[in-house]
Every structure is written in C-alpha cells, then in structure tokens.
Image 1 (cartoon, helix red, strand yellow):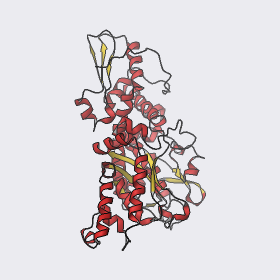
Image 2: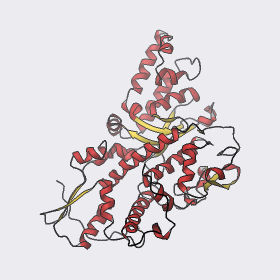
Image 3: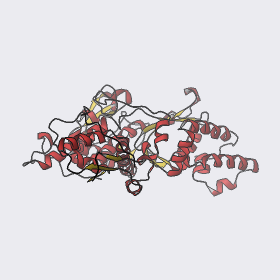
Image 4: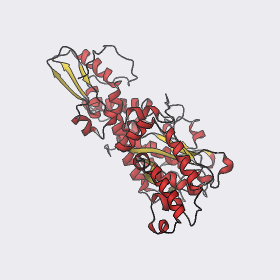
Length: 425
C-alpha cells in the first residue's frame, strides 16, 4: 500500500464562505473515497489507478480510493487531511467517472429529442421556432441569434434542448452538451443555484468570450489544454470523459465542398478498454491523424457512387454495396477495414449534434463523403472541467450539506429561494 504523510497545511482552495466543517468527508465519499479509522500512526492513502478502471465498482474491487486515519484524530487534523485529498490525482479520476456518467445521460437525452435539429437555413445562429426563445426559457443577448442566456431557471432552459424544438449547428450543440453534462452532474436544484444565467450563455464561440460564460468567457477561470490527448492517454480512459473536442479539415478551406461539415464539434462520452490501451500505446491522438490521412488516400482509389457511399461501405458495412465492388476495390476496402479495426475507431464514443452518440470511426468514414478532398485531424479543446467546474461542484456540494445540517434550511442555498427537488439523473 502506498503511504504518504499528509502535510497539514490549508491549501487555499477557493471554497465558499461559511462552508461547514464536517461537510467535506461526505463529498469525498460521494466521489468514491472509502475513509476509515484504524490502528495506524499516520494517514495511509491508497489512490490506485482509478482513471484506468471501467467504473467506480471496478476501482473499489481493485482496492483503490482507500484512506485510513489514526483512531481519534483531532478534528482540525481530520479536516486538513480531507482538504489535501481534494488535490489527490485519484480524486480527479473519481470525478471523471461521474463526469462520464453525466455526459452519457446528457448525450442520450439530446440525441433522443427529434425536435433538436441542425439546419444551415434558419433565422439566426440558433433557432427556437415560431414561439421564440422566451417560450423555451431563453433570452436573446446578441443580434442575429448569436447569443442567448437562460431567462429563468437554468434547468428549464436546458430542458428545451431535451424536449423542445430548437435548431443549431454543431458548435452550439457542443456547448449545450457541455452544459447539459453539468446539469446531470449537479442535479437540477444545484444547477439552478450554482451558476448565474450569464454563465450559461450559448452562441458563437467568439460571442462566448465576450460574456460571463463559465465555458469560455470571463468566468471560465483556468483553462487547460491537452490537444492531442497525450496526458489523458497516459492517465487512462476516464481522463477523457466529458472532454470537448473537434474533427477539423487538415487541408485548406479551398478543399472543402461542404462548408457545414468543415468541422465536427463533440464531447467524449465513453472510451472502451481497448481504445484506452491503443491510445496509451500510441501516445495520444496524433497517430490517428496519420491513420485518417491513410484512410483518405485509400478512399481516393475508389470512385464514390450513390449518397453516403463511404458511410454505408465502411461504417454500416452495407452487404449489397460491398458485393458491387470490383476485386481491386475490395482489396482497398480490406486495407481500410484493417485501419478502422483499431479499437480506438470502434470504442472511442463521441456525441456530435445532430448525429448523436457514435464511435469516432463512423464520423471519419462519413467525412470522406462530405469533404472528399481533405483528411481530418482530431483535437481536444481547451476546457476547465478539472479546474473551475470541479471547484464549483465541490462548493455546491459543501453548501448543500451545510444547508441540510442547519437548524432551518427553508431558504435554500446561500439565502436563495428554495429550488425544485434535485433530480440527480
């Protein structure tokens, strides 16, 4: 067992004023830490390799996320020890497991809404239909539909994308998926109070930078980059959970035939064990840019016929279409199948609006049809999942715990009107 002597110094973590003593342990236990007391002379911590586990149950079965404190530890020592655990790498991985679960719930809800569509022909960047944005919980902040923020409850505004009739391109789709992930992670009650309306702004990426957006604007805080997933690949599958990213044309704009598909914005919703092993062996995503280029070169040896030719041929494996190939074409397709047979292409699942949740290989095949004159590269976007948004989640959990323990908590969190009961999806 790995043993660390915990340095008992308050780290300056930006917690909300008045967060109750004793509320940190329940937060850590919710993340999966198993905290006990025993006949030891110093704190014993075994974080383990949580990011490589399939889920929290697998982590516990492997003996991860265990802490033993000396019996009768003074309360200040206990609290400072727990504060130190917040910065433990295993805590971030345990949080990533919850992020993944939230991202999958959010992505399924978005993809299951037939009213949430994509259109290049609409009035404004985002379209809320004939009833207008206000009827679906949003307020316009920028002209031509380039910016909106929730009008009343944050959760009601996000619900419009779950069940309402809305149109947007995939960039807004990614923003919505990121915010919906936070809604699923926090639950509606805390989501409604932990973020201001302006922090949940949506619109063009340029517009967001001019707002209080918690994703990319003035309240985003520290943004972290891992463009080619080198760090995440080394950590393990859970390190990718909820990450935003995009597939982008590798060659110049002049090679594009379909401008609506010049890029595909996504969030990562799941990574299989095989994909995680492949990414670790390859050191990240850069190797797959090279393989995408190989697929593109091979595709140029087969004349396209019919709509969605490569999507049907490579992703859907249309038997009739494959039977129509010449012997030479079958050899080329066999080489393409071999490339796409890498677990990364089959087990790295992403959500893209309006295509839903699919393996990344399906998107690579589809883009061979949409823009056949350029290959595509894969990039993870700058984000604050493990900085600002993690801190917000911890703060919200501690405030919620403090309110529950207070003699009278009828006023809700921090004096706000009591929100609806939490719906922890």
